Length: 327
Image 1: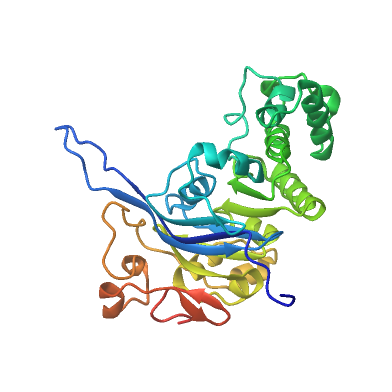
Image 2: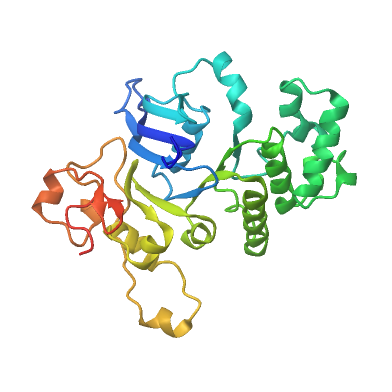
């Protein structure tokens, strides 16, 4: 029926990932680690969702589950309305062309024994392309991502970090995907090169109609590329909403703390603003605190925060998991 909203490209519901505890010196296992604890969100076609948080918050684990590099412990992943979280690898194979990933370290994610031609064309060969057609497509993708097609027979070590990441992006585009999970794609690069890769990914999104889940800890980078932002803490999303609203008026105290650490271009404004310093380190996911997982570091925590776990609820045009949002 016309006028109905289009279904989401990706729908994630109550996604969890629990790893077995490490073995001690006596051979006994420690407590299991719940790396991702009930994550839910939706992503529209052509949209970018930024997934941010401190190291160890579960954002990379979430990204790897979305493409089934890790098998979820529980929860639902639906792509274009089709449940993919429990598909067998054989049933999932035809869908993999639509779901691709760009990794953090470009050199470690590229096979050093293969030429760029083989690295980019491998996904096409798996899909049944001829070697000649796959090579031609690889050359086209090199040009599309700002590489010199004549370098197609070079090896990864012959490229700089930024160039190697362009190879990784070209590989992810080989099968004309609709969704790319970008796991810290610029964090291993120099600042000047980061801007070039971010601009490239934005151009590709516009030209190819891509959707991204863009995982990062740098909120200034996420602000440039995202339409919406999800903030994770200890395996849970604590705030998710429109980028402009979230950056202008953060509702969760953890979001406010993260944003207060982002440098401002105006030195005078940088000196005037309040910097929120979080005390201590995040708790271990093997022994999460009761109630709100953020309460041990929250300057506003009261008794209810220590005993009752907040759930995501609508606040100021977004969703926030906090008993006292905006305070």
